[in-house]
Structures are given as C-alpha cells and as structure tokens.
Image (cartoon, rainbow, N blue to C red; front, top):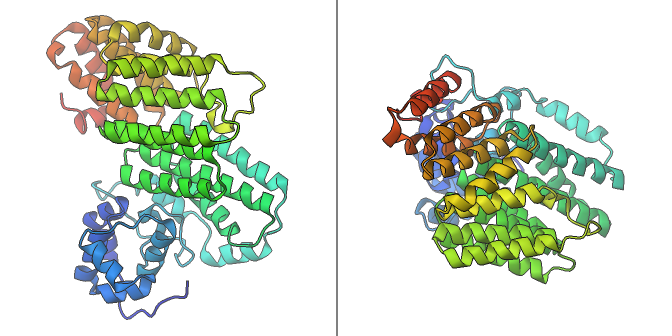
Amino acid sequence: MPEPPRSKEVPVSLLTDPAMIEACQARDFGLIFQLVKARAGIYPSMIARRCDLTPSRVGEVIAGRRQLLHMDVIERISDGLRIPGHMLGLARRSWETPRNPTVTLREPPEESPPVEAKLAAALPGADVDSILALAAERDLSPSTLDALHSSIADYWRRDDEHGGETLRPAVVGQLRYVVDLLKEQRPAPMRDGLHSIAAELARLTGWTYFDARQYNQARAYFSESLGLAKAIDDRQFMANVLACMSLQATYQEKPGDALALVTAAQDQARAATGTTSRVLAMLAMREAFAHATLGNHSATHTAISEAHAHYGRINPSDPDPAWVAYFDEPKLIVDTGIAHGRLGEAALAEPLIADALRREHASNHRGRAFHALWLARTQLQRGKLDEACHTAMDALAPAVAVSSQRVAGHLQEFYEQLEPFRREPAAVAFEVRLREVLPRQVSGSFRP
C-alpha cells in the first residue's frame, strides 16, 4: 500500500509499553487505537486514513462493536501505524529495518529479547528482500508445490518435537509468500494448489498459537485457513480446520461451541466427495471430546463407538489427505482413553492411555508429555498415588524438551490435584524433581 503522510509517528516508548505489547498479542485493536490516540496523538480519522479503513469502522472497533480478524486488514494496520510485524504475529514488514525495537513482556530488562524478536531481527533488510524478489523465478512448477508441501510436513514434525514457538516466524513468512503468489494470474491447477498450501500454513500458524494458549490469534488464523479452503471448495480440509477450532473450544471450557464446531465439521465432511474413513474417525473422536466436556456419558460412548467403526473400515488404499495421517491406531486408542478420562471413567481410561503411551514415538515429545500426564491423572483418580507420581515424573523429560503452554497447563493441573497428598513421600519426590527440571515454572506459574 502507498505510504501515508506522516505528521506523527508511534513512539518507541509506546511500542515497548507492556499494555501495548499485550494488546498487540491479543489483537485487541480497540485498545491499540485508544493507546495510539492517547500516547501518539493519532486520532481515529487519521487511523482510518493511514490504514485504509472507514472512520465509522474505526469508531465501531474502539467502541467494542466490531472485531478485525482478516489478515489483510491486520497487515494494513501494521503498515499504516508502523507497528512491527512480529508484535501482531506477522512476518517482518517490508518497511522495517533489520533491527526491530527490542520488546519484552514482563521480563527483567537484563534478559535477552524473545526468540521470535531475535529471529525477526536476523532476517534480511528490506532492500535485500526487494533485490531477491526481482531475481526470484515467479513461474511456478508442480515441483515448487511439492517442495512447499514437504516444508509443511517438516514443520509439523518439528512442532511435535520442539513446539511451534520458534517455528512461527518462518511459517507466517511462508504463508505471506504464498498468499502474495496468489495475487498473480495462474492456471487453475496451480492456483488451487497454492490455495491448499496457504490453508495448511494458516492452520499450522493457528495451531502454534493454540498450543501457546493464545486463543484470539489462533482463532484468527484458523478463520483465515477456513476461508482459503472454502475458496477452492476443499470441504475435507474445512472439516479439519473446524475440528481444530472445536478442540480449542474444549480447552477454553466452551463445550457448547466445541460441539457446534465439530458438528459443522462433520457436515462439511459428509458433503465432500471422497471423504475417507480415517477423516470420519478423527471427527467422531473430536465429537466424543465435546460430549465428554459437556459430561454427556451416553453421547460420548456413542461417538467413541462411531470413531472405532469408521476406523475399522479404513482401507490401506484409501487416498487419505496428508494432514490426517497422524490419526493412527495408537492415536485412536489414546484419544478413546482421554475421552473416558474427561468423563471421570478412570478405570476405562487408564489401560487405554498406558497402551498407547507404550507405542508413542520417542521423538513426539509433546504427545508423550500429554499422554503421560493424562495417565498420571487417571492413576491418581484410582487412588494409585505412587504410580501417578512416577508416571508424572516420566512426563517431565518430554515436557522440558518441548515449548508448549498446553503441556505446562496439564502439568499445572496435575500438580494442583496433588494438594491433598502434599506430605506423602511420592508427592514430595515428584515436587523435588519438578523443581530440579522446571525451577522457573515452579516459582512462577506453580503454586507449592
């Protein structure tokens, strides 16, 4: 977009203010606009002009009557107000210098800036970006799409092993690159392929925010992914995104939303041509999670039975989408156990989760941490304190290896469930070990 006239700039003191940082992380544009007005003297009419918005729309955002979720609008706000891209979960903007303002949230000043800020600062400068763009080959080939799909598969593998926090800048950058390619006229097969890749990258970005428990950002990217898939009528992938949003709703303790979203996902899957049994099994299990969160025993058991029935109909020659390959037999078993665990049916849950955990791939650190903590929770519910604490200690190594706020949340819940047994030797031993491997989390997030 053309650069708007600049009579006033957003001061660095505002960009480094914790209130502004939190508002940007939450994409709370009503608060952002208020802070920009109060601290930089940039009034709503000026915000509208700089960001290519109508004054009435800006007023509705400030009044809390409208949200801004579309990525092109968020990019215009970043460019119009000169808010560095990483503050809003975007790739570094073309106008940014190689070094962004150092921004930290609730950290001592002597500590290093966040990893994401370091990565953004290490990217090439805008002039180098322009030179590389001129030299780049814009005539895409099928091999280019294959390479992009391969990079997505690698991102997912690394997300399982290490978490998505450090991957996010690269994923968002690649997403913006692909979306930019879509602005050019292309043959239908190439255009559809790019839409599919962009939808996958947007879903992966949403997933990394969901795993970090930054739910507003996650929902924005999931919504973008949904729109990209809808543009090519990829109903199976739309079902996949809606299932992700349903899972997030269970974490936000919104079981009604979770059930509505997974029901919509199943509707999309049934309307699609060639939806595979593996996809239907995954969706039925997500439905079981929603019912279990609602405490509906009968509906949960019915959905579990449907998931197993669909899985039993899987044919090895079925053309499964790559994004559902993770839903294998151990995943079916562990999710069945977790659904029973959510209902409080620990006797049913424990052997299932234990069996799946034995078959879990060693490199999937987040999965091993999750499932070990679920197993510890069911063992504790069954009065097996020693076993529960031992299992939870086994979860600490993969929990340390992966950056995941969801894992930290499960660890927090188990620690709190130990409160009645705090003086028991097994609980004491677990707390000692927890303090050894996660001292900052115990002193900060955890409440001994």
